[in-house]
Image 1 (cartoon, rainbow, N blue to C red):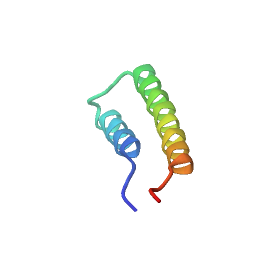
Image 2: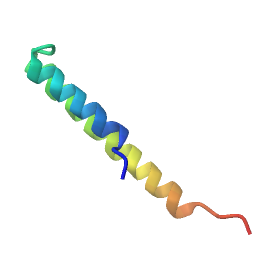
Image 3: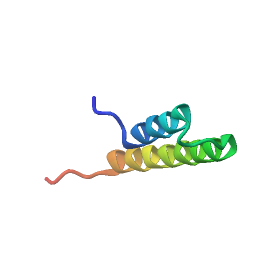
Length: 57
């Protein structure tokens, strides 16, 4: 199963913080929460589209 786009972004954000490229803990937490929220929203959207998709007859 391919990695979800938001998961990749979270990994990159975490790596930036771990390596010291991103040093502000508050900014890291804020960005992480926004990415998590966006990921949940995208998952809900995808789920809704899949449930309501009508295949051609």
